Length: 593
Image (cartoon, rainbow, N blue to C red; front, side, top):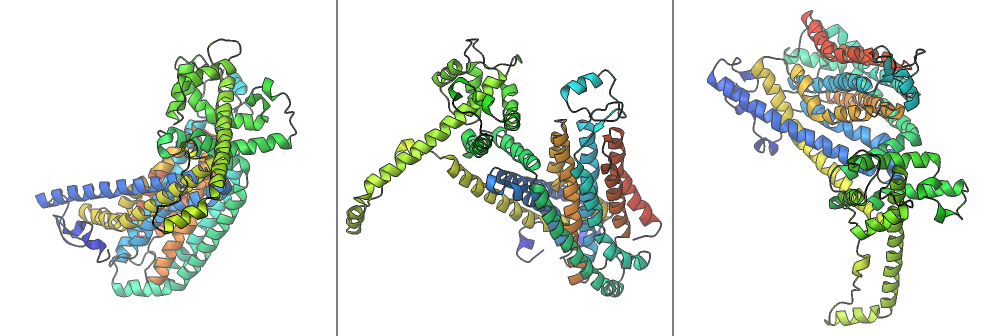
């Protein structure tokens, strides 16, 4: 650690049971050893939790930017994957910058291998398992409810259920394997030293090997950066796919509204949905829909079919949450509670007015279609009210403009300012202002998350390395398990959450996110390693780890190339995680580094 940060964090080598860096007592050989191990584990848990929170801040900040329509495409295709790789990249970076960088680089390689293999095994397998739907006898996934009911006559098994993602998953699998070829640039020349020693070799031998690998590492760095830029260009092009971008935006909107009191975060239903409704109106105008009978038709009936389905997907979680008795309708009281939880303060009188307007048969309850009308009407009313408020504010300012120069002159003489006071009824934020709030909040979240990652990654590397010295377990295996838990747990949960929706689009988003994370590790994170090896004069001693990464990526890509992934493939993919650890241990046992 640097001289400044070294006093801000506890050095695990100064804890009981260790006499210095790498010089620790045998495990449980003394009371100091046991007590020191407990303290080190506590540090690892604390730092891991901070890094977990930091990765969540980065994720939340980038997801908030999805609520800004003008940049949603670039955020979903570039910002999200890059920020997702920042925690792993920071651990890898700091592992190669310490005084004993050659030894601590095991921690960075463990983070790289653990992150890549974990994301391609555990969340992938769980996504396929929980996202599977019945397959017809010809092997076609039954995503339509009617087809699913017909196929439901057969008892579901891992052989007659599966998922059928969109073709982009097959295309991205090829990209993932192609970017993994960058490993071979450094691993090829390193093979001749794979059985000649280990990371504990003499400094002279390490210097000799690093000098032989120096230019290959530079070539690997250039290739990794080229793959990184090419991958971003590819993602930008794929980001132009409106269905994928819409799915990410819709998920961000639902999360923003259900993650807590929306109003407490300065976000409201009109502020979040106004950009979408503007797009919906444009679609309606372009389709030349008849507008003369608007007063006699529900707003939802006038929407284009695709826009109607999208808005229904957004509102359905709220409808079913507040439909307490499950009868498919909402009472005025339930509607008031729903809007209050969204941060929209609606009086009982307003709720009753909506009921009279949206319940023409006087049944006293609102159906799903009527509920959609209610939401659209509320957002439209709020948007109209905002326009009127802005007009009123402009008129107020214009009316005060005549005396503005005089007021300013008086203020210069010490009589007081001539600042125009904005009326209270126009003081609330419109959706344009809420967009600015979203941008500021997203920037703050990402800045804080990045700062925490940079601050705690270095001490986390020291702790993981020290745990290896205390337990006698190579730091690679400790980092392989612990680092992904801190930096990639949110991706695991998000992919499973999305897969459980059991739609073709949701499973595509889930699996493509995991493929994207692997590609970022193959490019962005590997480029960091290549730079460390090239400029910090380190030796590449990671043949077993590299082979494990390549085996897992090629295997998963082989499954991803299939049009239908049957349920049994989830068990095979899940088994790859422990199998990869066993593969590394086996290769090292036969003499590979």
